[in-house]
Structure formats: structure tokens, C-alpha cells
Length: 73
Length: 225
Image (cartoon, helix red, strand yellow):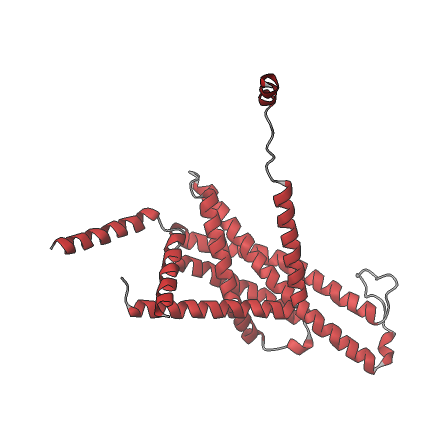
């Protein structure tokens, strides 16, 4: 079990890191405008969706299996 | 409330130890790349940036590089985790470190290029707004040459439109140039840091397991005593 001092230090570092990261992201968004990031996010989402759909493994039915089924019928 | 804080702290500790990275090495990579990319950003802004953003270059370089540091840290962490996952078990030392250097360079440069492009977009907005104001106050600005020497002349675009096109063209050219500079300078710097701290990229999981075993054996001894 770790002490209150450790908890305080980790919390302080996490809060500073979070605020710092948010500040850098907000600066980038402010510089470039929100529309550019929205367009980028939409493009990236569309690209990921396209990859996911077209690279989905297709479940091919083995030839032997179909012939066995026909025979059994 | 304190329960939530405690759980969050424990989760952060677990995540940090799960990454198994040398954080000093991560910091070295991030600081070096962030300040080098900040230098190119400041240079580019001084060359083609908006007049409204003119400041002392040293202060601007320090401020912008420090501000963007967390994004570079995230980029370096991502690169090192990816490199360990993809090439960590490779017996070839050259492949392992070469791939790590390339991944850190590519991801670091991507962050740098995004930063440069965003700054350029802001400069472009300021410059076009300034041009529009000028044209609104002075109609003589409509009679500008459509294109400077060596730049493509936009078809059917004169006056303010031509000036905007030229400004955009200048920024795109600057970003392209900066992208190349960023990549090669980052590659050189990453190789340099890798030479200094290449043996301290990832923590061995056995070290942590050993620590855990020692800690638990101490606890058992304490209970038995």
C-alpha cells in the first residue's frame, strides 16, 4: 500500500500532464481552425471504416463440405 | 472522492508499469525532437508568417516548443510501444534499433508537420484577413499583378483572389520544405539519442517480476516473523 505522499505526487503530475496536453491540443485547434480537424477526423473515420469493411475476412464454404451435404440430402 | 483518487492513482501506476519504458529516454527523445521542430517552426514563421504574429524568435521558439512537448512525449511513447511490439523479439539488433529509430522519426515528424501546418493555417487566415481589410479600404489594391515570377498563375483569378492564391501557394511550399527538413533533422537527432541511450529503451519485464517476487517474499517473511 502506498502512502498519501505518493498519491499526491502522482495526482499532481497527472493533472499537470493533462492540462499541458489539453493546452497544446487547444493551441493546435485554435491555429488551424476546428473545421480542418473535423474534416480530418471525418476523413480518417471514413478511411478506417472502408478498410474495416473491405478487408473483413470472408467466410468461404469449403467445396467438399457442400458436396457432402448434397449427398446426405 | 478519495476512493476515486486512489483508484485512479493505482490505475495510472499499473498503466505506467505495463508500458515498461525508460521514461528518461522518452523525455530525451521528446525534448530533442520538440525543440528541433520548434526551431524550424519559428524559422518558417519568420520567413512567411503573418506580421501580426511577429515576436522575438528566441522567446517564441522556447514557448511553442515547450507548449507542444506533451504531444511529442505521446508520439515517442507510441513509437516505442509499437517498435517493441513489432520488432522487440527480433534477434537482429540492427533491425530492432533501426526500426525503432525510423518509427520515432516518422511519428515525431508527423507531430511536427501537424504543428507547422496548423501554424501556417493560422498565418494564412491572418494574412488573408489583412488583405481583405486593405482591399476594402483601398480599391487600388485590386490592380495587383496576378502572379509573381516562378509561381503558377491562377486562371481567372485576379486582384484579391490572386493575392490569396499566392499566399496559399507560399504556405504550401513552406510546409513542404519544412516537412523534409523536419524529417531529416529528426532522423539525425533520433540516431544521436539512440547512440547515447539505446541500451535503455525498454524495461525488461523480468526486472519488474523480480522486484515483485522480492517484495512479496519480504511480506511473507514479515508475516511469518
